[in-house]
Length: 377
Ligand code: THG
Image (tube, rainbow, N blue to C red; front, side, top):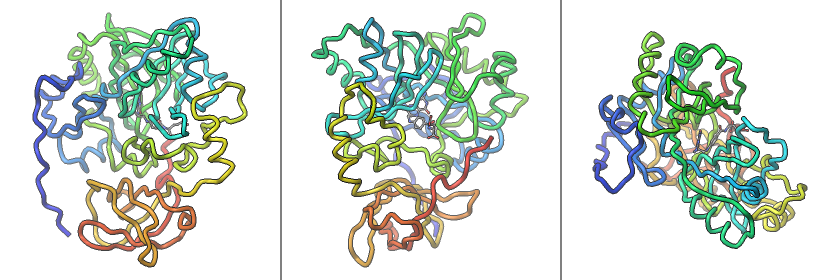
């Protein structure tokens, strides 16, 4: 099946915020942007499948400054951050990152950021696409806690792919090899202030450089490109294909504020036994006691090659609606269509056959295991 349609333009104007790397992404020929946290986010420079292979085989550099930071400081910082998330932070050391659900009072997911602890009383939340700065400031108004919540000048640039470590060694030094997964270090690169973390939204290994002064955006980009040249670095962007294969979730697509962490596979980050009274605790206790009604699963969609979905595709079992495909792609490594789906609990068992209503007609699909492909390393 040929899916030949042209994507509409996204026009560039002064209203939408630009990343410090925005000029560089234009110069390097970025062909498509999306909007994320009210900023332009590069999507691809070339053919997305070719970029996927460069991520899987080589190394790619991504402007992900749209993963905007919320900074929390002040004497009550730890207690305040722990109020925002069900994840138990008592063992989060300075220098460590944690993937943390942010839940509302009804247990619904408001965001799924990466948390960085920069000091005893100094945290960043590296956001997915929703307005957590406003939420956090709203919570702080009546919390009776002494905290300051702002947006710092900090912009992530991701290096992802199996050759990312080699580039980082040339760029920053040998010590990056010792940096553990989900840990970071503060450093500077000839006067460019950075937080260097071993993390990123792919399972191909890599780093995230948080630029701490936006005026160096162009300089950092060019230094990365220079260090990467002999490692065949290319500009890229978060790959929808790779992240579905790896089972990484995208806020807004695979979850919204309608979903609780248990049903989307993030229950392992919810600690109901901790002392702290985080927002959503009572609701999540009740949800856990009652049992989840639906569940995020992997699915294989049989038949001809399908493109990325532009909206959720309904799922049926014997003509009865039973869920939705949230994210779908053709997997070049598995050579089949794979997808993430939210389905009613009765239909979530491995091997269950369902029917997908795609825009091109019905297709048969089967519930499978997540992730579709195990991480490298
Ligand atoms: N890096 C940074 N900020 C981000 C993202 C990122 N903000 C937006 C978005 N990504 C937030 N969502 C995620 C989702 C998954 C992961 C990170 C951020 C992730 N998960 C691993 C996994 O599921 O295997 C590890 C989770 C864990 O620690 O157990 O990496 O990518 N700066």
